[in-house]
Length: 194
Image 1 (cartoon, rainbow, N blue to C red):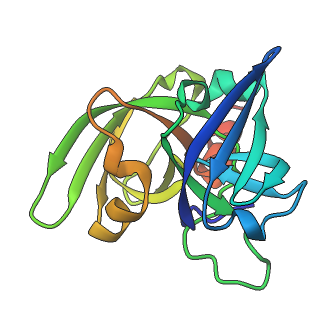
Image 2: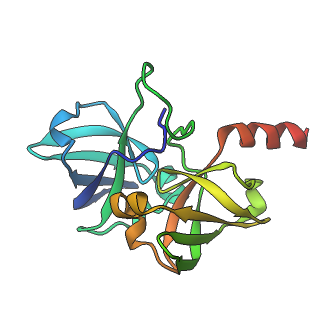
Image 3: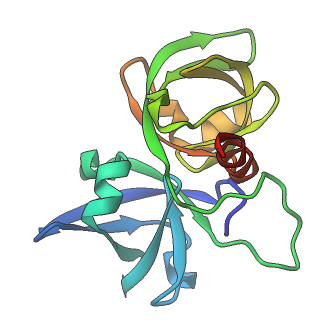
């Protein structure tokens, strides 16, 4: 379980394909604090640490994960948002995030405002995922508030701190991002279908 509050940025240092799997090695300031078998969210995708070296950790994304997320598009040198799982005795600063990406979206709008940024993302609504204005959405693992909700798109406003401390600084029109829709909204939508 995660909160969507990004702990640090990591840099992809190596990618290795093995059958349908992708092993991703990431350099970060938290690598020395990680343990084998620990869950860490990478751009919102919960992955298990399988190897550690001085200053790096390695995780494996299986084919299912690669099909639902943008992890298969990573290149050496790319920045990834990292968050360790939340502690039960800590504040929930973002919202309840499972680290289970529902689908990807494409950035269709990027606007520089006076002191902030607005991003618009479009997604395939056929899977039944929805957003609501002032509701929560997780974009590349970042807990954000929906500003403008439509049938297959939404906008979010980004403060300078979030822009500077996440990989949103690299997202522009045409960029693919990972989405995890609000878990409560997903359950309500499923119940309404019955």
